[in-house]
Amino acid sequence: MTEPGPELRTSLQGERTAVHTPMDGPAWSPARRDRRARLAAAASRDIAELYEAAIDLLGDSGRPARMLLLGHCMREIGNRLPNILNPELPDSSKQNLAVEQLAKAWRAAGLGVQIVGSEESTQAPDVSVPRGVAAAIESVVAEHEVGQRANYAKGSFLVQGMVPPDLAGAATHPDPSVQAFLRSKGFFMGHTHAGEEDRPPPCEEEIHDRVRHFEDVLDARLGDWWAVQADVRDLVTRANERRPQTTEGPGDSGDHRQWSRPSDELVREAVRRIGDPQHRRAFFLELANPLWVEPLRRSGLFRTAPAIQVDPDGSVQIPPWAQSQYLARMAAEAPDDVARAFEHMDDGENPAVHRDLVDGASRMPARVAKRLVPRVVGYLHQPFRTVIDPNALVPGPTHRETSPAGNSRPRRALVRGDARRGGSSAC
Image (tube, rainbow, N blue to C red; front, side, top):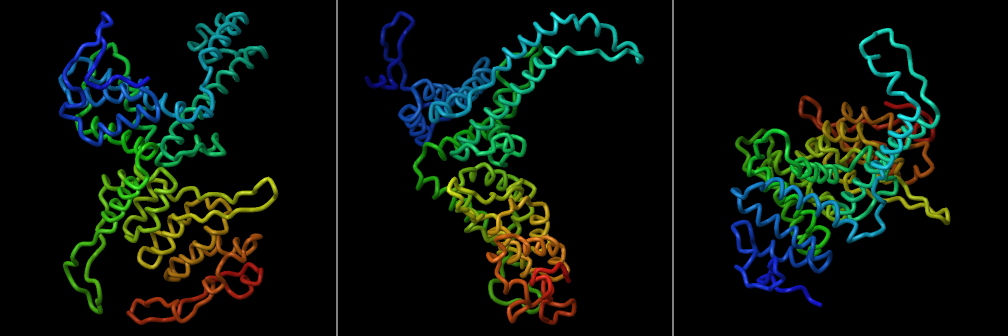
């Protein structure tokens, strides 16, 4: 049975009555109508109608209880859609049941009587907690952590299309794109209940921005893959913009344009839009602007590299990482920023990332590259050290740096010969 057309609604008396054509308010657009249809087809009618109600509310700033209703719509989409698309996601927490069991154990042990008034005395004795109460407390803490992991799993599936293998670790050290989405989800959850006092509504710009963030994530999961890739390419084009150089320095030649420094808004958009691994890879493989290194480092996109993967048959996969490849390419133009990014990175013991770090260090001036020498020496003792290009460890015709006087001179080796043979000496 097909869903009734959008121009029909059911009255309280059960009669089908024609009403005004919906999805024609000021906030609606062809893209939003298409998104509503995709939600109905790929998820459920309820999710599609929640989205429809949210966009109607978005375009009606004078609607009574607008933020309360909008908050409920967006919260339900964020909480229910992941499980509809992937029923295998981790179960939600049973924290309420655990708290109920703790309350019973607590009262049965009579602990409340011992603690009342103890905060008034600095000499109050410690209270012995029975084993059963301690177990109930542990259950509450464990269920709280289960809830955190389940919430992260939902966000990660929507943003990245997958659930991390180490869910506990990911929830503790979240991916920046997932974390940004969970913040937007938390924004709406914070407006789902009326308070004891009236609260001023958020500014319109933030409300629309948070809804667009949800829509970007929905498009990444349910939208046309090529259209989303085109959006990512447009994002990279804007990131790689150059502006005319105002003054020409001595010896300048070739392209007399300077890289544009990214705005905070553009960096935030990028973090939100490249949560999906394929979109993120496409972005970093084409990003050529060195002025993005530090803003992206502060956003956390260089924090954790993928670790090597050991399959059940014992074979090892070494995943390349587009982020470290981008850093290596930018090392000559932004050496200090790149060195800082590598210094603060958890490289996951990934030889592909080790290779990129050595490649990047070989492009830096010696004064900067020496900050990475301890890592490079450590890599030379790793089982997969043959992945590292040995030519990057020694000076060659193309490895030159400019002295303060402007003269080109051979660059010093990153490590001395005995270190390359397995020793530990470094320049």
